Image 1 (tube, helix red, strand yellow):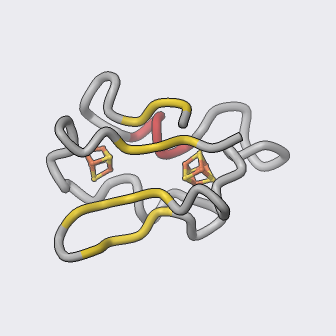
Image 2 (spheres, rainbow, N blue to C red; image 1 turned 180 degrees about the vertical axis):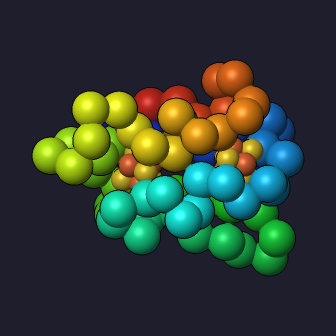
Length: 64
Ligand code: SF4
Ligand code: SF4
């Protein structure tokens, strides 16, 4: 269970990085990716994936 960032939709705003409780959002060469092994979909921490909550682009962060 993990979320993923749709690269074509991502504007690299960076909003998703600081809200992840698992440190699963990574910045790589100016783009943002989610470490699928580290992402828990925020289970046990929050009711909703926090990255998806703060992402300003609809359908940018989706279930992997
Ligand atoms: S769903 Fe939660 S754990 Fe996964 S990357 Fe987003 S904020 Fe981090
Ligand atoms: S919040 Fe959304 S648009 Fe911004 S860097 Fe994260 S995935 Fe990309």
